[in-house]
Amino acid sequence: MSGHQYPGLNLAKSNERTMRQITANTGELQAPLKGVFAIVGCDGTGKTMLTRDLKINLGRGNRTVRRYLGLVSGETGDKIKSLPFIGVRLEDNLHKKANRALDMDKKLPGTGTALIMYLFSLWRVAQLLRVRRLSRRGVQVITDRYPQAQIPGFHYDGPGLTVGRTSNWLVRKLAVGEQRMYEWMATQRPSLVIRLSIDADTAHSRKLDHDLAELRDKIAVMRRLDFNGATVCEIDAATPYENVLGSALAAIKKASQPPP
Image 1 (cartoon, rainbow, N blue to C red):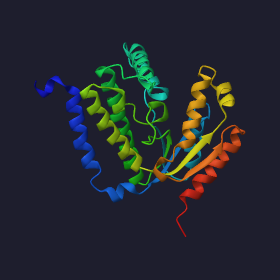
Image 2: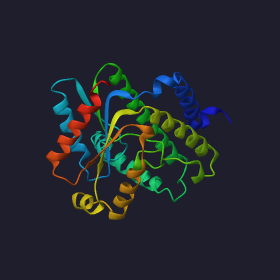
Image 3: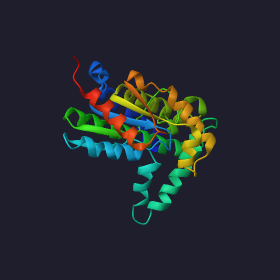
């Protein structure tokens, strides 16, 4: 059959060409992105508030922008909801598909969902390329979340497709392409990762609509991530917020200083 009958295959081939182009200079891509500071942590750690306040404080001396690097949930979901006529229904449909696919113990539900997940990952690559361009222009970037290739699962900002979860040849091809995307994104290390730690009970008290077991799982996984060897600063998000903000500003100031 002709290629146009398999849009996912065309996407996979196009992505392979793109990844070869942007990874041509491997040595350059291994260097940390200057002025890029990633804020990561489980739900309930206060990532959104912290990234917004960091942008305000750091922007007083240098041009600073904030970028959200999550996917369909959170801010991206809110933007989809704001679309006229179809926004609310589209976001609800995508959210349900994403939640079904996020269960790593289940097989992927089908080619349609796999294509959506693949497109989400392409969108994430595009966002990270924008962050890289800003870094090269001397702009400081504060990111809410950051992609990683160490542990699969959109909940952990890792790849959503895995070859072992499907016997569908097209989905398997998409999974291989997506894994390459995340491996490339993992080479785009930020100058500093600020990991907000928290205990599950405190996180749940702040996010009562979240499942406690899911929060415990996210916390356990977050502790294991090394972000491809990036410098990581641990901050206890259960302490008073002014302490968290002060510690984050101090860590960024230290990371921004030139080496002796």
